[in-house]
Amino acid sequence: MQDNFGHYATNQDAVLEKIQHLAIETPSWGYGNSGTRFKVFPWPGAARTLREKLDDAAQVQRATGVCPSVAIHIPWDKEDDWQAIKAYAQAQGLRIGAVNPNLFQEDVYRFGSLCHFDTSIRKHAIEHVIECIRIAQAVDSQIISLWLADGTNYPGQDDLRQRRHRLLDSLQSIYAALPAGMRLLIEYKFFEPAFYSTDLPDWGTALLMAQKLGPQAEVLVDTGHHAQGTNVAQIISQLLDEGRLGGFHFNDRRYADDDLIVGSQNPFDLFCMFNEIVGAGSEGNANVERIAYMIDQSHNIEAKIEAMIQSVLNIQIAYTKALLVDRPALRAAQEQGDVLGAYRVLQAAYETDVRPLLAEFRTRQGLDPDPIAAFRSSGYAERVAHERVASALSSGYPGA
Ligand code: PSV
Ligand code: MN
Image 1 (tube, rainbow, N blue to C red):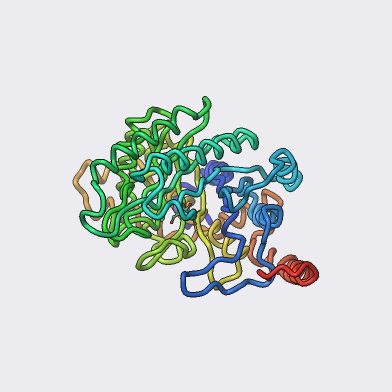
Image 2 (cartoon, rainbow, N blue to C red):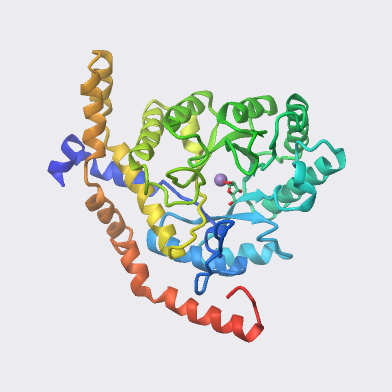
């Protein structure tokens, strides 16, 4: 390990300490059946209820030790008794994380939600987000993450500036309902489901909205929500500089959509994003401390719990490599105009095999150094496949 880590060998404990503090939230919807609009392939034993999703998320926490919270989506995860859910999560060593309102699945949202031309539909959407704020309060969550499917499909379909005014107006009503300490994370996506215009298409629009709203509003970067070739690391640097990087939805994609395992397609890009974060943190950027690291993936054909664990491992690998960047050497190369020298500092960190260090981290935490192998040998997947299918058959549940 000494050779690999160069002058950081002496700092191994500091690196391990930092890895321990990178908490990653997993999404409840990543444990249920999902698919494309062409086909949903049911996974044997996929979670069907919020409790089952929490059971599965607890496995990810057990294997990795860094996933103590679970994001929920309302109404997919709607429950009558939130105190009971909170207690159920706690008993599993978990807590409820970000609450995601759903402003895209009701018939009334055909022409949008917060940007709709009909005031009563805008009001309906605002009330749903306020309902989510109340749920967040009930489960002691501090985050509402808001994504809109709003947009238009044809030029002229609606007045774009009017839509923008409606959006700001709706967001202001939502913001006014936020209790102290709760953050509204505004997520953007450049297209889909709308194909001509999207009301929150990019980080700039999301940032403008956040700045107009106030300090409790920040931007949520879903890594899969950019056009091909977009430099997401640079977006991260700008948001950090503005103090408005609320959090991430991690995932990866090759062409479009956003559900592949984070780091599986463009691991160097992921490293570059973390490099911006670690760099800003090393200079005392206060925003770095409150970034919410969340995964937003729905696995279509792969084993769901394993895919979630693998995603966590990929994030840890990218982060650990960013921690190994020799920052003084990087700064010196930059200030000498040594273009290749600077690049080679990043390359040295990126090409370091950090798997032994991460195995050491896990061993020190009392975890198995290979979380996927540990999960596979636990027999959990086979057990729930058996139990949940059996209980579905006996109850006549159609989704098994
Ligand atoms: C939209 O594509 C999105 O990224 C939003 O975060 C949604 O809440 C989530 O996916 C739903 O799967
Ligand atoms: Mn997302």
